[in-house]
Length: 185
Image 1 (tube, helix red, strand yellow):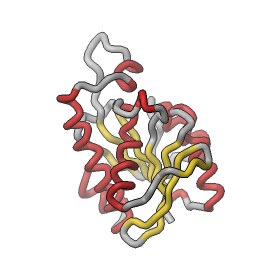
Image 2: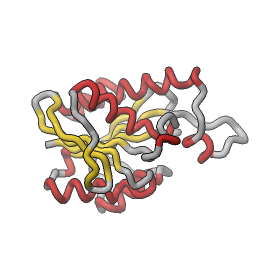
Image 3: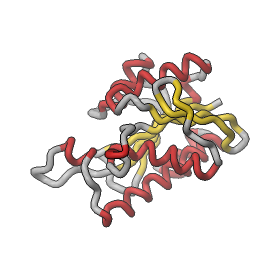
């Protein structure tokens, strides 16, 4: 069984922000594989189903970004999911929009949601898919940039990253992380 987690913020005010790329990928997987992510449990919205003949749980933590790890650890402990079957998807300002990066491990960097995940799991050894959102223009506050309005002309590029991340999740489940890294990095 895989646990696929998209990081984001739960309120509708945040739904079309750069910080919700992880939620957007979960929504795409939910749509493609007809997995309803609507049960409120483990401080998140979850749904279970099958992707490429593998049982999966899709999770959108509802704790707000900076406490995402609290939801993830509850699901892992309840379902006894091994960390090699955890995939966390989130936005990254150090990657240009439309691009993704897949890694098997690594630090949380400056991403507060990932800091929470690493702190709760007590390890950096799990798969993550980072979706590029690019850096803000000079004189733009980082918080305003990641949770602020995204101009229509930028959305298309961000959505390319979401689509690639969805396909990367499928590739990881079908084949493995190395195959996805070769294909998408």
